[in-house]
Length: 115
Image (cartoon, rainbow, N blue to C red; front, side):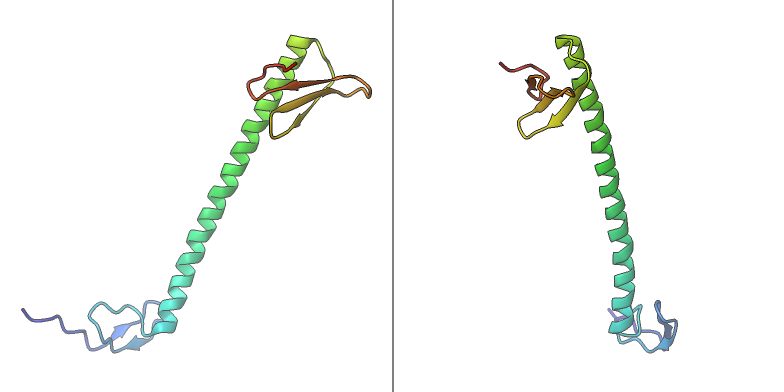
């Protein structure tokens, strides 16, 4: 089996200059052009990953807002409390009337009031 011989001259995929390749599959004239092309490809991938992350954050924020609105309507429906401010905590949702001095109502993540 005979090995493929590299062509006499080839055009660099990055800088478009002609070069004599040492390998039959060489695309770039040297390490600098190969690295520059890699960095450009990486930037595109990084930008796509960042866009996906921002989309996930926006989706989670939308779902969180909908969940808080459901909690708020549950507080009004179950306890007759109007003017409710909801505060998210690690253990659940704290529902407080916006009038100072009024007692607080604690709800777990399932929307059940706790004693």
